[in-house]
Length: 365
Ligand code: CXF
Ligand code: ZN
Image (cartoon, rainbow, N blue to C red):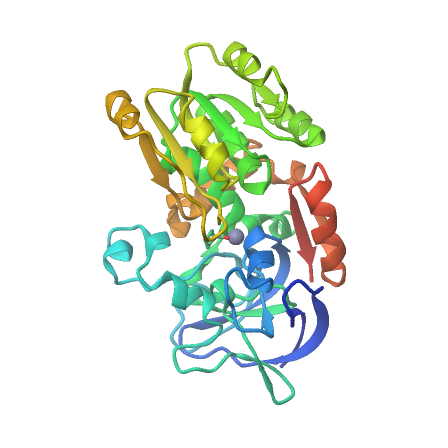
């Protein structure tokens, strides 16, 4: 079948809109008509080869859409079902067996190899192979072939569905980090460093968990948005009075820090601000040589925890339906932090997202 897709052909070059051929779904595969797909930083760094996905490739890993057809072994969904697509996991390694699929021992090959286990890509441009299966989905496209295990059926109206793709990665990561990984409790003082899609969805989750949340963010319009979404304060980390402002906003000290920057010096500074028994969560795809210097004595005598987090420690089958319920109840208003663009305008969407108040560009194929 012919599909339209945004193809990454060269590092640091714009995506190209092209017509491709997609395989029919086999065995446990599903073809989804993509209605909306978020743009995540991981798509950009994969195109740019910080994550070395073989090019040409169709990226996109925050898709939502409608099941169109299913392989002979699929039982989880049926044609017509609405689904959010998330990452792929093997289902049987020690992490998967203990309900922690984001730490699947096969995470990298399953999500970044661009080929099925038999070596086929699922996508072609004439005779040329195009990498598919990015996070098991490659959803910068009108249609995606997905494994049964990385779709989650959702009960939402068709107007909302396109906006919910990012529940499969960025929003799940931000919200899951606060609700699962850092297990934030009412009344705790939480500092979120960086107000992109992950940081801003963490702000929303902080409101759900009833934390006293402070966002640290350089962009003024994003600081204003965070206040509207329930943050107690939003501060410019470069302000000379920053430490006084933070102490005034969070008397009693900082219990939890959630870093989305991946910048070593920033992480060191915020670890130093943690109160006894504090916890810092690290989530960014940092540059490969990023190191953090830890004062071991201070960590020990203050009982500090440093935690790496992938996908918010979420099990998509469990956590995405929870986020959908929060969305439907108005507690997780993704529409306030997203902006839609036609798939054809993917390059413009990426540029706008860098500097605007909205944090999630959602492409409508
Ligand atoms: C990423 C986070 C950084 C490592 C690779 C996977 N998750 C989603 O975009
Ligand atoms: Zn992502």
